Length: 292
Image 1 (spheres, rainbow, N blue to C red):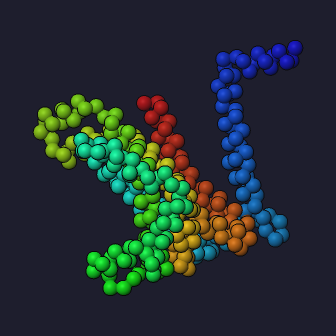
Image 2 (cartoon, rainbow, N blue to C red):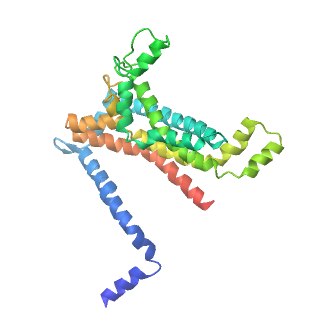
Image 3 (cartoon, rainbow, N blue to C red):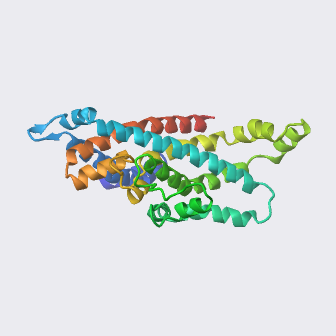
């Protein structure tokens, strides 16, 4: 009797959505919620039991604040660079140019590689003794001697950001290109009849039509770049010193180099709290879009 009732309830129309969502919820709980609870528990562990020693240590440590600043700089410039470069190339390849399909494929190549591959390629290109970038700039007469781009505290973070922009912009090209192709041609014809120039058409027609996809891409990319570990680790490992250190590499070092799991977990919780801001904005935007 009980078995029949359960079977009836699971097969009812009201229960069907919950049944379909349940596998995703279980995977989410196993891969996200449980590790988060475990990290929170580890972050509160002290030599005498439980406490907030790791969190107090974070707020007193100047390296953490410098790393947080580096992470913000890395994230903001990378996201802006991704968007501007991606939008420019999407506009060019959306126009009527010869061989645009070939160019679209070429621009997607950096995104096809795992992040570690562009990181290693750029590390060799920027090598202080054998790098092709130094050789090229010296042939052009722009520098007199080779510059240790990744070994100098003044240029290491900048070079990592440039490499990260090169690696990440193709996703914007593909997404914004798809958005451009959904804009009705009649809107451009109406703007042309009204005498609008290229900039006016872009500002009042193209950009507003890309608003939705742009917001989604910018918010999700902000979360990705704030968690970006691979490019920094493969190019500089946060050095020289800590000049290019970001939060993910600092967490890695505390956990696996210094075996300070409590501090690493506390930094992970801090990273999660910061990322809740763009996450909350993204969910709010999605809910408003669904209601519209």
